[in-house]
Every structure is written in structure tokens, then in C-alpha cells.
Length: 144
Length: 143
Image (tube, rainbow over all chains, first blue to last red; front, side, top):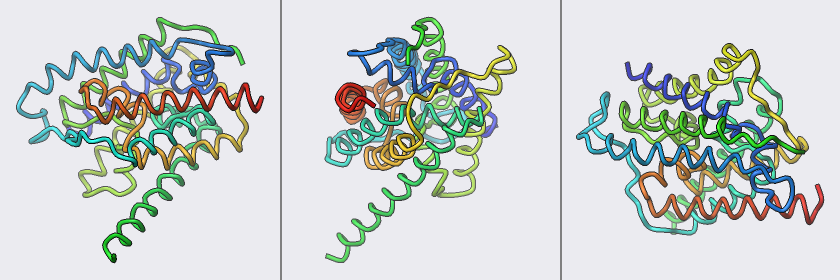
């Protein structure tokens, strides 16, 4: 049942991303190109997703636990630090260059398009590089 | 490259993204964040941890296929950038979301919906930086 719930969540997400335009780099980049070929569609994607989730979470998180687990796995930190802001800034630069974000690209893999595969391979390389860097920094900190 | 303004379709897609986030939280108690799900898939803590992440990814990839089966067309993907820009951009996104602990889905939708200060700061930061980057690429460099 856990896996069926996971699969259906992913499927609804994938259909939503597909019809919303978030998997289409031309639409994504045009959303940010206010000075050029502006297409405001994406405000409806993020606005719709945010309002629905905001309302839904009120009800869901009031329950003692999710259906198939013993507790909700929610991030608890609330401090702002350099990795969060610097990392998010870098993510913005990459998104502005490529036009794909991870949430747009993963469902788009289902189209089999080579551009999506190229982006995703580069994305994975970036994740591995960053994790290696984090491990290196942690081992230096432990040795010092 | 011009694109057509699609408010209703985009709103419908957004509502589905929200519905998926609620369903995953209600059943497994997890954040619907593409970065977190993918990162955990690469280094899962157990077999059970791997399996739910793989099931979500499989569901996501099925999305465009279901759209094609119902409408007769694959979702439109127009790529106005070069292969080099896809690869360089993808690599930078990978580094950024790892250090920033999330992307548009995890911070921008789920984190913002929880009014998390970290997610609000992250979302404002990447939205502004994406806007600046697109401006520089298109209007300063003229790519």
C-alpha cells in the first residue's frame, strides 16, 4: 500500500507538471523574461499548487500521524545559513541557464526526449559533486 | 521563442501538483520535493527507503505517458537553449539544490505552504536569481 500511494502521488505530480508547462523550458524561461517574450502562465502553476497545498496541509498535519508511517518527516530547522542561500542562488543561476528544474525534468524523462536526459545526467553529476564536496568539508572539519 | 499564455491549463496543473503533495504527506508523511526524493534515491538509508522513492519516480515518469494516452499528444517540450547550456545549467542546478536542500517543489510549494522561513528565503533567492540570469543571458549576452 505504501508503494501504491507513492506511485499515485508521483503520477498525479507528473501529470500536473506535464500539463502545467513546468516541464517546458521555453515557457519557464519566458516566465522570467519580463523584459522580453513574457508568458505569465507559471504564476498560475505555483499559485495553484501553493494555495491547494497550504489548505490541504492544515488538515493533514492536524492528524497524529500519516496513514502508513508512525510520524510526519518534516524539516525542523528555521535558521538561515550560507549553504541555504548560496545554494538557492546557484540553483537560480542554473535554472535560468537551462530552463529545467528537478521537479520539471524528472516527469519529463517519460517523454524520452534527449534534452531532458542530458539535463538530468548533468543534474546528477552536480549532486554527486556537491555531496563529495560536503563530505570533504566534513572530514576536514573533523580532522581540525 | 514565443509561448502561448495558458492560465487555465497551468492552474489545473498546479492544483494537481498540490493534490500530489497533500496525498504524499497524508499517506507517507513526506515532503513532495524532487531534490529530496532524488538525493535519497542515490543514497537510501534502507531498502524500504529506496522503494517508496523509486515508486514516486516511476509515477512521475508515467505522467507524460498518461497525458499522451488521454490527449494523443506528449506534453510540449520546447528547448530554446544549446546542449552546452543544458549541461552547464544542469550541473549548476545539481550543486545548488544539494547545498540549498531543495528546489521549486520542496521549498517553493511544500516549504512555503508550511510557512517555513528557510523555504521562503530559498524561494525568494532562487526566483530573483533565475530572473537576473535570464535577463543577462537574453538581453546582455544576447544568447
